[in-house]
Amino acid sequence: MQHNLLKFLAIFVIQEQNMLREIELPRNIDLEPLANPEKVSGFVSPSEDYKQRRLHISQKFVDDPVNTHYFEAASDEMNAYGIRAGATLVVDRSKPVVSGSIIVCSLDGEWLARKLIIKETGAFLTTGDERAAIDVTDRNIVVFGRITCVLFNL
Amino acid sequence: MFALADCNNFYASCERLFKPTLIGLPIVVLSNNDGCVIARSNEAKELGIAMGAPYFQIREKLEQNNVAVFSSHYTLYGDLSARVMTNLARFSPDIEVYSIDECFFSLSGFSDLKAYSDKIRSTVIQNTGIPISIGVAPTKVLAKVANKKAKKADGVMVLEGPAEISDALANFPIEDIWGIGRAHATRLLKLGIETADQFRKLPEEWVRREMTVVGARIWNELWGMSCIPLKMVLDPKKNMCTSRAFGKPIEEISELEQAAASYASRLAGKLRREKLCTNVLSVKLLTNRFGDSAAQYFPSLSIPLDYPTSNSVDLVKMAIRGVRRIYRRGYRYQKVEIMATQLIPESEIQMNVFTGHSTKKDKISKALDELNKYYGAGTVRIASEGIKQKWSLRRDFLSPHYTTDWNDIIKVG
Image 1 (tube, rainbow over the protein chains, first blue to last red):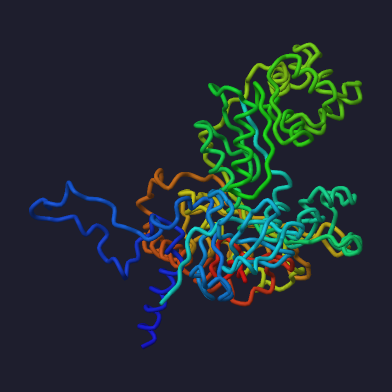
Image 2 (tube, rainbow over the protein chains, first blue to last red; image 1 turned 90 degrees about the vertical axis):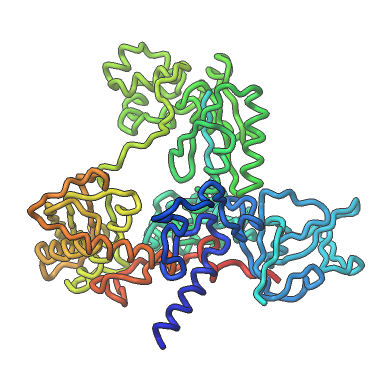
């Protein structure tokens, strides 16, 4: 019983830790007992010349791992953009922030996920309803970067 | 042409990245064990807080001036440093990471160096959030000079023509020249040589005679003749050390053994990461030389190993044996130092057939490394390292592992 639980936890932790961090994942002996499953002892495998790298989620959602950071949504404020409490936010600092970008920023010391709107009259943050946007032009705001992807468990 | 990129007040900048409210406010970072100040933001420098000032002595001053205090967080600084260096490497094929916050790279073959350096600088700052300065010049020593000037200008300084270079050297203090040690600087100052320009106007023979070939190299570099190439292949390390002061002095041998075991185990992990094995393990105990009038004792012992190794089981066993041999009752120990010397690459090991070295222990070490990689450092340890590490490092002001632990990522509203 305990062994099974441990094994389950192991799989869970491994997925949690490596999902987005590394593209070349270290092999997990329990999940992948064979070091090289394509290797055959008899006839040469017909797929030998057609090998390609298996898809990994991070290839699709993390363009630039060196400049990517992760945050966690703590509220449903940004539900309009699919961000709900518990979601993991992927922030790529190398992507330019422009008006309309969904960003992570620090506003007077409070970390927020918001949509940034830049107009001639100043800079505004909104959670979806632009009429309720707040004016941050003269406030202490530091933009960390653009959210490029939102992930959550079903 | 050489460029030197240098992160401005690197440790303070790392802390600020995840605490933007500290922008413009004074920050200090303390050494391991929260002993003394090892890094200061500009604002803290302006308050007159000295480098190396012991924390307990300046605590009141820090509180009065609302200075933010951090324990050194090398996991965080190491990760952010790697991000900065990787971004820099995107701009030049030849790059030498010189330290955690400095990097030389070649800009030979690039045109309009000022514009290119401006672009490098703004891209790195945008992508990493860490402010940097770039100095560009025909030699490494001059690139260092240019970098210092860049910090006072707009972040980039290119010294190219002879006139620009002599202008820059005219008021550049002799003691700030890269490679001139304190002893030589003091001596030159006594002779009335106060600036880099005065130094390079000395006859080369004099410099070679009085300051050896090292001094002559600096002299030539100051004249724009490159003698110190980029070091892109690093020499293999000759020795490796883990040592740290304890949170509080230790008298009991059992706790010392635990500490030694823990450091030996960490050392073994370090060796394995670099694919090295050690031939000799040294153990040293130190009492507190500073501010402690109690009896002093600094015993050490070097233990030759039967075969070169990097496995935790052997090294921990030897470290404990060493501590037992040199320990004497009645002293208050402040520090234990475990050092591996005479290192050789794993691939060069010649097994002595008579020692019967078993590969079982190597397998254990490998499993240990993998488990700790998955579950986080220190999850699985050798029992002698202990569970409650009373002697462990004091890090009262440690910030979260923002970039290396999913539990520590910032929550946003």
